[in-house]
Image (cartoon, rainbow, N blue to C red):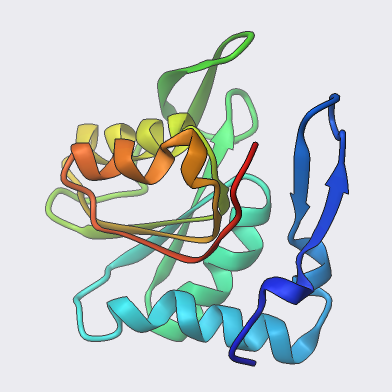
Amino acid sequence: MSDLRHLIRTIPDYPKPGIMFRDVTTLMGNAAGFKAAIEAMAAPFQSEKIDAVAGIEARGFILGGAVADRLSCGFIPIRKKGKLPWKTIGQQYTLEYGVDIIEIHADAIKPGERILIVDDLIATGGTAEAAAKLISRTGGLVAGAAFLVDLPDLGGLDLLRSHGVSTHALMAFSGH
């Protein structure tokens, strides 16, 4: 499965006119494609010490859990505010229409642990940047960030790199 792009469904004008929505569920539904994607997302980090993968809600849970299994490490869910059942710490980030907050359990990361951020897609990078800040606030070290899809016109990978985060995306689609 050398080219996984053909497994990503594009839905024009969703959720609003002018947006080309990149639907990764079609890739996840293809057994060979899903396996190849997980292997490719984990590959750059195989030789690094990764203590846990932090998957961003919701598709990042699916991908992150599989990458964590591949890297033989733990998994940390990064959830929207109010979704975790125990004591949490949160990080606010800006959306085009306001602000939101992501959270992790307060005891999810021990100081010095190396954490890999995983999500399905990076656009502007706001959520991934908030995840990196959240991990750093716990004393964890951001070992990198891996994504299936990058939308380079929106600058998300550049934003993460400006914070010193090593990034990896399997494919890129131009536009929004």
